[in-house]
Image (cartoon, rainbow, N blue to C red; front, side):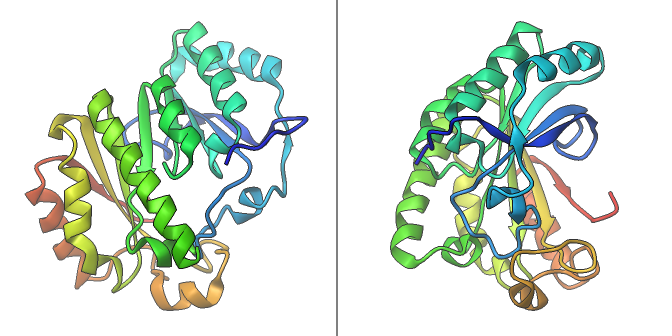
Length: 250
């Protein structure tokens, strides 16, 4: 559900980022707040509305004007930006005003996301499977959110805009759900998709929300194991889309 805030909240922004969208230089903004409780989340303080500051559109616009010749897109991530629809609308409007494509990173589970993706020139979203486990939600809530997610990705496929589909890989767990991932990826035209295989990492590389969960399911080395990497590489190749298997030091 979208929130009504007296002041829109962000964690900050970075005018030049090489790591937030594959193959792109982005001006990245972090929105505060999230409706999920992912145990592996390393940005959980901002997701819990901590370490936030008020949104300053005039300052953002000034810095974007200075950076726009050097960036491929503005990338709004979180947290979950669609909890603050006005923030999404303002950043999209300012970006397009200055001729910079607007990229939205959303978990696609909110009703607002289904409308706000219309503003985006590019969307990034996670394929979190098994969803109940990776979202950290109780079963009834997870079921509703997953239904929202499937509606959202189906709409994205109809829109025909470029998408980055990210698979957060929980060790020994996500690999059991390749059929679900395949069904989602195949909704899209292959030339519109970049598939990112993203092994979840834990301490000392990140500070996850649930350290005990991550000690079991995250990759302490920062990359897939020798056993799992060939499985994911062959799977990605079989889908016929552009793909990247991330490593922590990439």
